[in-house]
Image (tube, rainbow, N blue to C red):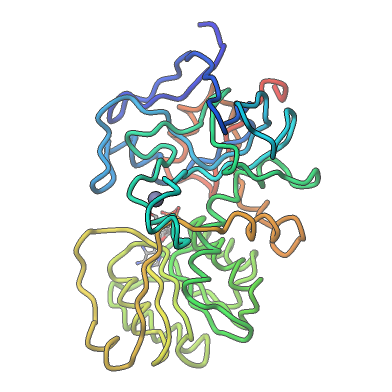
Length: 351
Ligand code: NAD
Ligand code: ZN
């Protein structure tokens, strides 16, 4: 096969193929990007293995990948903010810019959002990809392309901790220490949380949580949330001011509510079953606010500043590296649950 624009295309459930696609042309306000690093997210794997996430159903072939960095290789008409050769991180969701959500600054809720690798929109696990210039963020020279790709999940953590209102001196419980939970630990600490306690089923994930700055870890060994709550309270000496639920597991959501102080906040980051049982009376009478988050909004600049200034070090999250040609192997490793973050290099020059 020639390799003009090698691309990871998901044809249907369980049918991921490497295809050679035409190089796209940037329209007005867009740039052609030579892709550098793309991280695999749980959602990419889920579309591959299930063909859908909730109401988003794969109905036509779709390119995977949305945690990405690149080099600008061509400018579309009217682009003045970037130049050829700029190194950028790509914010993968481009909203309509016109609706009430967009105009009031909550563009993540825009109903016309075009988000990479969410059907029907293509992602960017490819050699070349076109994106709107104003959703590309220029990386300083000392920020690597891998760090640029990690701005995407880091932005989820910036948004979650914003919604939680994490501030100096808070105690924060982070439930689930996958990539999203780990980035929430880093971000909560960077925002001044005094003590962070992390939970997970898996001891190796908790090891990573400790390495990244969690003050306490609790391994979940019982399906009874109250058992876990007790261990959390013993570790923190009290309930937490804030809980950030990053596992999507129903028992963990109960733990998050019970382990949060009266008047505190629980943020729902993890997305699991559509319907779950929750201790709503307990939350209600104790004025525990339960808040959802959807991706992020206006968070890329903050995430980039955190990395560029050294406030957070996201590098230890990358545990596996593959080349674009090996994407299927990379997805198989992700499906087996190996490591933390798997990075795919689209850079021919690196080979
Ligand atoms: P992940 O699957 O790698 O991590 C989840 C972690 O939770 C795992 O380490 C797992 O062992 C742990 N876990 C499972 N059951 C648990 C329990 N009962 N108690 C404590 N820990 C438990 O996933 P991730 O990539 O880190 O993403 C985390 C969640 O965030 C997913 O549900 C994902 O869909 C969601 N997410 C939501 C948004 C959003 O916009 N709301 C954005 C990104 C990701
Ligand atoms: Zn809109």
